[in-house]
Length: 146
Length: 146
DNA sequence: ATAATAAAAGACTATTTTATCTTTTATTAT
DNA sequence: ATAATAAAAGATAAAATAGTCTTTTATTAT
Image (cartoon, each protein chain N blue to C red):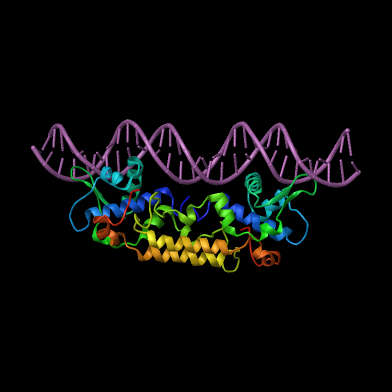
């Protein structure tokens, strides 16, 4: 198990992929190309993008020349929006040992240590924007598959 | 989903519980008391402790006055041993976006950010010893249930 | 030796996550 | 208008994780 669910991993990678494939231009990119581009099972990814589309995190149009794309507002959104939408906020606020009422006044043994780590994750994901890696993705310096 | 699997959360909490209930004395503590003490399903926890016992992370004896305990070597072990035994090493070394070959020469967009975070988790879990919270657990300043 | 106790082991069930397949709806080009 | 295209929606299926139940084995006190 990683930090994120498999669903969330695919979600982030696909949004990065859509970003760098459609940024600037008016183009769209189809589910098939995305699935190949991030090495994910196509029908599963379709479900995930359907959900992200409903939530307004990615944009899509049906029919010929249709596909997924990102408007300029979406390109500026932080990665934390994707993670919160897919995996919820537990990774930012949950107790590391799974205690429901863990808090400053009722702390688990690792409360402070985890607060620090979760905070770093939160800040990192909040400061990173969806469109931020487009250049490096286009010239192949960064990978979204393998 | 948290950072750890449910199994691993129960494992850590139960080991903390056994530690503070048996440290110093020659006593043992039974599965029933542990399950109540950390609010976990008893038969599931039994399976988990069975596994930790096989791996030598906790000690146990059967029969009357039997139960689980920790020898002095076990009390000094780092939490990272429990996590590695139960959840594996992915949390310390795996790619945040799930890429198998993510590395310095083939990085995902978040490679450096995650390297940093995973490292902090690893160091924290390695520096924290199983018996370290016994005093605060005994006087109720720290919680392992709710 | 025997009975009582408590963990170990093994088989089984339920739930959640991951993944697939089929049908419907929207869009575009002809 | 019609046919072709591509995502949306819905219904299933497979795999992994979480949880339960029953039987066996080891230990101890009598």
